[in-house]
Each structure stands twice: as structure tokens, then as C-alpha cells.
Length: 278
Image 1 (spheres, rainbow, N blue to C red):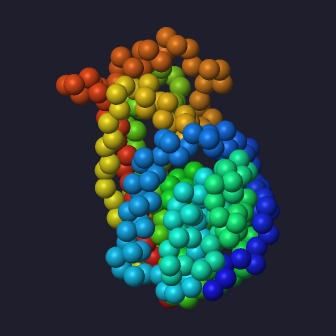
Image 2 (spheres, rainbow, N blue to C red):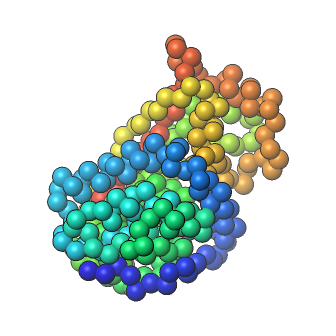
């Protein structure tokens, strides 16, 4: 079944008070287009968790149309396109730079679309599977994205979403609060309670799975470098307008809790949402 009936290259619906923030997010990820895949070990783990469920549950019918929402460089779009039971595939991202990178890396058979996940240029009931890996935490209100997903899914279609929750990067947040208490340096994430309420309001009978993922780094600077290579820097209004001084960075590193071997750990509070449209 086809997914498309869309306007490839459309900017979708960047509008409202969040226009500047969305443009900032798109620009930040676009600037990281060439380094993103080499730094995306958390992204791959969380996306692979969803792919494994697709494979073990035989959740995709033959010739299903699939949409990778927030496709980035197209890593998982390419994996979806390679699945035997998947037919037409589209990759959607807010960032023009990411979509350009995905188009260069990916198959010509994929429909690459620049669009806002809250205003998708896709017809009602036009796809069978929506796969969205670590995208909705960047949205001002995930309920708008859930409503769009509900709109474009066919009856029987499946939605698979991963996100991050409050408590993510808590070690980095604590270190920065000690080193620079007047400014925020780490993005805020929704609490599990808030996310569950929003999911339940828009996606009846959805399943939500959570777990804590802890990744090791040789130093806080390695963690900061990974976030920079992902384009996942702090986007809040409270951030410093100037480049953080080297002295503050060194102080943050001193404040960061170390393991006995001198390495550091970063915690990620992960959530997966699974829903089938009836």
C-alpha cells in the first residue's frame, strides 16, 4: 500500500509561537548531519528495540506502507525499506540538512520529506506503520504529533515511538548546577506521569515501556562531544548566549561524578510507546 500522496520538500506547518525554537532545532540537527550517525549509539539501541518487536511479533503485513517520522540521516528508514514485507517508505524530518544527508545515503525508492511532525503533508489513512525514534521529546506538545499519527494511520496500522523522560542526563545536570548555577545547560524532558497522561488522552490502549539506560564515557568532555555531534545541544531560553568559557567547562568536569576507574556514566530515562489503531 502506498504511503505518499504528500508534497516532497514541503516545510509542512512551522507556525505559531514555537517557530523560532523549531527553526533552531532544525538548524542544530542539520549542522550535525555529517557526524550524527557516528555518535548515535543511544539512538540505535532504542530504534533497534522497536525493530526487534516488529520482527518477533510479525507486526507488519505484506506490502505495508511505512513512515519514519523524524528520520534524521535515514539510518532506520533504510532498515525499514530493506524489510521484505514493507512496500512504500517515506522519511520525514524537520531539518533540511538531515533530509539532504538521508537522501544522499538512502535509496531513490524512499520519499524524503521536509516537514513538521505536528502538520504532516500526508493524506488521512495513508500508511500502515509509523516508526518514530527519539523525536517527540523535541516537540512542544507531543499530543499534536500523536493526533497526526492517528490521522494518517489506516485502521489496523501501528505506531511505534521512542522518547526520553525526566531524569535523562541527571549526572550532567548536577555537574552543571554546581559549576554554573545561574544557567541551564541540559534539556528538560517530560516526566513519565505527564507523558502517560498525554499518550492515554490521544492513543487509547497504548502500551508504554520504560527503562533506564546507562552509557559509559571516558570523560564528561566525551559526553559533551557526543551531544554536539548529535546536534542535541541545550535549546532552552535559559542557556548562555555566549560560548561557555573553558574555565566553566573544566569546573563542570571536576564536578561530574566519576567511577572508580575514572570513567563517567550518563543515564537516559527511556520510554517506548506502542499503539495499534482499531
